[in-house]
Length: 422
Ligand SMILES: [Mn+2]
Image (cartoon, rainbow, N blue to C red):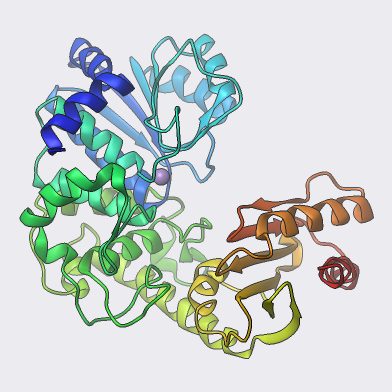
């Protein structure tokens, strides 16, 4: 199917056509955009802001450090900022968002996560995965909207790509492209080949199954990931006073928006960094990030084979306040020796007041990571009488967190009991 036909069908199916009408109707009004602080959310926010500005909107962008939009935050902002319309982008599709209709009459959720809770009836929702899962991104959904409105440019296409990369819906370095976005990818690949062409350069967090080739798109998505808090809202203001004002993903948003407004072709990631709005600060943050990344990768070389069960080599890594743990672990997972049919990598970070964080990564999911993490959380909840301890995920990746300081030896007793039962 050609992209044009895809756009027409999907706009009808997902309600992008109706949303476009609404956007035109509100021309010249004030919009408040809440977006997620990861590369996808940031890219989606940039595309949406650019589109609304073409219709003379005054646009306010907020990049909260929380995933879901909280009632209190919306209530306060609606009162103080008096927006005419509110967009909630890449921040999950939660059933309880429907109740926010009582806080503001015009709420629009644009998302690509499966619905959690009851279907939404009182607010506007555009989410292509509501009737079945598809690998895509919020940036892609907003890009479709921008195309439908007739205001998308090359910069918006590139922003859509950054979000798709950030959410692993496209893997240009290994030619793994989600079917759902294939017609768009084919179209944009011709135009922006320099961005998705395979190169031998610094491998990124996205080079998991191979480390020989990457693309400039992968490198850019990783830079935006680092500037946006590295998935864990970690901004390096505690290490450098120059970075004192970088407290959430808004810094990354502004820098990405600035670059997208010209979207000039570049030859290396260093050149991309130089062309951001605040290149000096951005470079500092990215250097801190790379330093943490390399340190963690080095620590993880000392992972220990712990057990062989269910045809799986199980390795353990234990460290103190480990930065970027699950991301680095996803790469290390493929470097650990495999003697059986599968490898499971369990990472443990003791984080003092912030508790103990377990990350699980599996190559083939023979031992279900999500079940292990969930079971561990239940054990820890029981031992400490704390329902705030959480754990879960899918077969290949899962997390478990105590979230507050707990006796480390007791946490480990529960962990090893759970492991011994595998
Ligand atoms: Mn996303």
